[in-house]
Image (cartoon, rainbow, N blue to C red):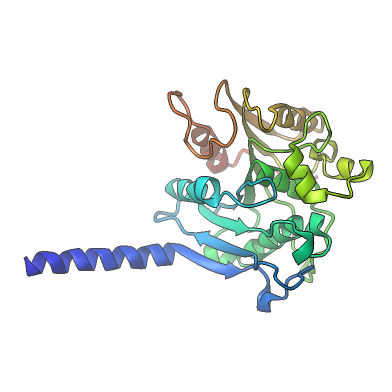
Length: 293
């Protein structure tokens, strides 16, 4: 009995040690020198998820949704990182700052700046994580999908200090039931109001309607939506897909007939294929791996 308890204790301690090694937390800004921060601001961070069996030198930064009012890490970001690990892919969960005027200046560019900093950090520290700095993608859900489509269409616009001139362009993009447009007819109102309200102008609406910001250098993209989504209209994905095709940017789209909004990772029952299967095959195939023009 004592021997059995000893073995159980050893197994438990080894599992805890393995878990601690697999997840590493990093402050996003050195010495907490956080741009646009006011007293009381949260500290943005990355959590690194290392795969038990690494199968590629690709990495994915993951941004949860939450209407720019929170982050649904437990339902979206953490399961996505673990699922990427199962596929042998290194994942980085980004806790970007949720835009709040009382704790930050210029709140509308704070999530973008944090996401750009995440790309900068991962690419500049690629050797540490045994990844290729030219194979760093970004994935976002819902309002996190708006954030990553903003990153993918605004990579030449930054207030971030970048002395090494590191590319802030993700090499590929995955947007899951994303908010893309801030146009009245398409947008998710809470996301728009939380990011750019209350001073909403036509110029700001256009700037953050990412289907209008696509160029030939927007990264190759994998889109996921449900046709019956009543929270974030599927047209957000369809308009973004159309803009990508107009600019000859490689794009794949995976649509569920039924699934609504917020289904996260593999949470739709009674379907033959979950979106993660073709998406992760697409990532590992590197068919997105095209050179910037």
